[in-house]
Image 1 (cartoon, rainbow, N blue to C red):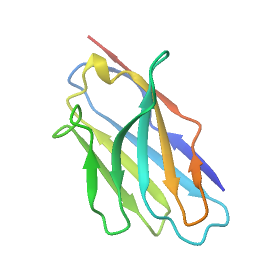
Image 2: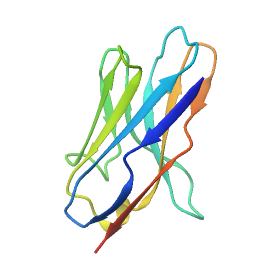
Image 3: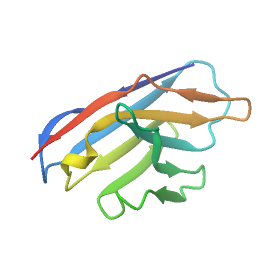
Image 4: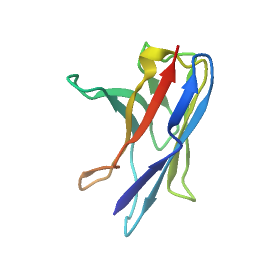
Length: 114
């Protein structure tokens, strides 16, 4: 099972980016799909989560600005990030939970300039 994250980049404050994470390989079912982020010296933090029933959770710092969604037919999770702030700068990791274990993607860098 592999998770391929894409969509990161450099954007000015107030701009938008859309991250994608495609899951490939033999997998029976995916439970929660998540986006985390991490800066050097800091702990990895949960940014957003979406359940199989499409209930969502957002960290307080991104509520109202970020939207997580999933396409089960494509085994892909998205993170639409609007009104980006310099403090959103981080490496963003996708993560999925299955009945057996958790899988992580390789991360994609998001840099927001002021």
